[in-house]
Amino acid sequence: MKLIPKPLPGEYDPYAIIYIQLLPDDGMILKHLRSNGKMVEQLLRSLTPEEWVFRYAEGKWTIKEILLHMIDDERIYSYRALRFARNDATELPGFNQDPYVIESKANERTAASLMEEYSAVRNATISLCENLPEEAWMRGGTADNHPTTVRALIYHLAGHELHHMNIFKNKYLSAR
Image 1: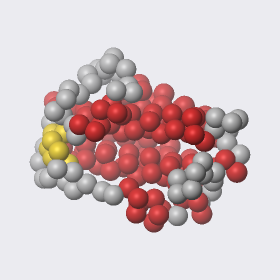
Image 2: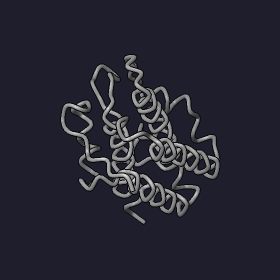
Image 3: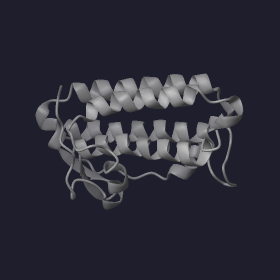
Image 4: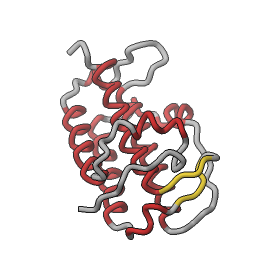
């Protein structure tokens, strides 16, 4: 199995440390993408229809909205990783997550359709990562006005997912 060491400060926007620090420093990011995906699917498949659309406070997203936000985020970060891995140094813009969630209409979708999309996106991310040449992991560019590397982007998206899993457990499902 490929070992891809954790990115170092300077390889990512400083705020991303909140996500990257959630992952072990074992270089096994591909294993973590797989196991995190299984953990997400197991937890979310256990939800009742009411839990999927529950908001723990006014203005907070539902679990459906958070899951689609995670999917969108993974698509964007894996796209950035693809661009930089292919040595495309074009500066990439940031994005505002709030309009994405509003426009997603996640709450109008079935849980099954969201889970199917999540699985497809995760499998595509893993396939991309498994097939990157070794030298591609340290390539980088600028995204959202910050220098970043391919490995930092992938660690970010994996940690972002863990961040939201913690929120699910602590804010949405703690009364179970």
